[in-house]
Amino acid sequence: MTAELRTDATPLDPAALRADFPILDQQVFGHPLVYLDSAATSQKPQAVIEAMDAYYRQDNANVHRGIYQLSERATAAYEGARAKVAALIGAPDPRTVIWTRNATESINLVAYTWGRKNIHRGDAIILTEMEHHANLVPWQILTQEQDGDLEFIPIDDDGVLRLDVFEVLLRLRPKLVAFTHVSNTLGTINPVKEMTRMAHEAGALVLIDGAQAVPHVPVDVADIGCDFYVFSGHKALGPTGSGVLWGRRELLEAMPPFMGGGDMIREVHLRRSEWNDIPWKFEAGTPDISAQIGLGVAADYLRNLGMDRVREHERELVAYALETLAREIPGIELYGPPADIRGGVVPFNVPGVHPHDVAQVLDRFGVAIRAGHHCTMPLHERLDLAATARASFGVYTTKADIDALAAALREVQRLFA
Image 1: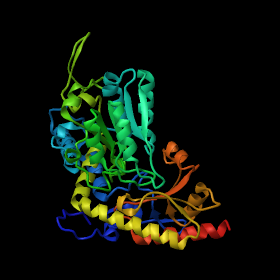
Image 2 (image 1 turned 135 degrees about the vertical axis):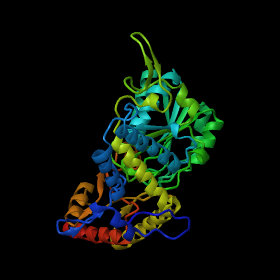
Image 3 (image 1 turned 120 degrees about the horizontal axis):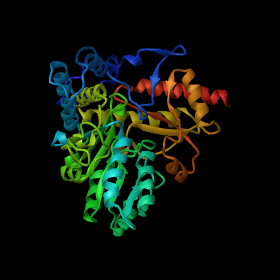
Image 4 (image 1 turned 60 degrees about the vertical axis):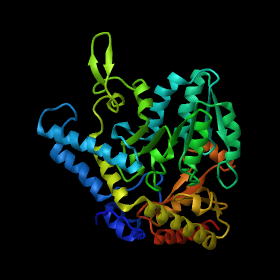
C-alpha cells in the first residue's frame, strides 16, 4: 500500500503499513523478523526504494550542471526533495535546507563554520547530560581549540532535564545552547520550544538535534523558534547518506563555507573565489543525488501518514511495552520517563545478563534490538550503567512485536537462570 494524506484522527494501522516495507517480510533463524532497532536506523518503504532505483535507471546525471533532459530531470527531483523536507519540518524557505550526509555532519558543519567564527576564549556552550556523542564531541573539539567552556544541563533519575538548573546556567550568557529534541537512549521528549525561548532570552543561539524527533513527533522549526535544526535521513525512513541542516537564513548567509570545490562557488579565479548562494554554498562537489531524492519521498510518506498520528501510535506502543515488560519479565530494569513524554525508545536491563548476551539470544528468536551505550557514554555514566539493551519503534511496529520481545526475554531468563 501507499500512505495517503490523512487529515482525520484515525489511528495509525502499523500492521497494514508493514506491507510497504519489504524487508520486514522475512524470517531470521526460522522466526518472523521483529525489528526493534529503528532508533539506530529505520527501515525503508517501497516508495523510497523505487524512487532511488528510478533515478539510476532513468535520470542518472549530475545536478545543476547539464543542459540536457537527464540532468534537468535529476535536478528537478533533487531540488524538489528539498522542498518536501522543508514541508515536513515546517521550514518556510526550502533554500534554508542544507543537504548533508547525516545529523553528525550537520552539527560539525555548524561547529566548524559558525563556531569558529563566533566562539572565543571564555565563551560558554550549554549542552545536556543526555546528548548523543554527535552533539557532544564537535563542541568539545571547538571549545578546546577556541578556549571556550562547556556546561551541562543535568537530568533527574527519570531522565528528565532539570530546567531549574538550566535557568541558572543561562546566567553565564552562553553563545550557544545545543540539545536533543528526543533522547536516543531514554526516549525523553524535551520541551524544545520552552528551552529555545529561555536560551534566546539569555542571548544564546539554539541548535536542536532532531535525529530521533523528525520520524516520530511533529516538528515545526518556525514554531519552535530555534536557530539550527538537524536530522539524519536514514532514521526517518530515508536512505543512509542523507541528512539535513536547517538554519535561519541570516545565519547561514553569514557563515563561511564548510568545504571548498565545485557547486559551492559563483566565480573562481587563481587567487580568490566568490561563494554561491545558500543552500549550495555548503554543498561542495557531486552530492548523493539518489539519497536526497529518496529522503524527499520519505518526507512525503511521513507527512501523508500524519505526524500527530505517528506520535500517538508510538505513545501507545511505549505505554504497552512498559506495562508488558514490567508484568512479564520478573526483575527487569526499565529506564526513562513516562510514555506521555517519551518517544518510541525503551532501554532496559535483565539482571544478571549482559545486554550483549540479551541481544544475541533475542536474535536467535528473530528479535533485533540494540545493546551497548548507544553513543551516550556520559548518560550511562550518570545512570551508573555500563550498558543497556534498547528496543526502539517505528511506524511499522506493532503490539505483536512487543509480545514477541517479551516472549524472547522469558527465554533469556530461562537460559541464564
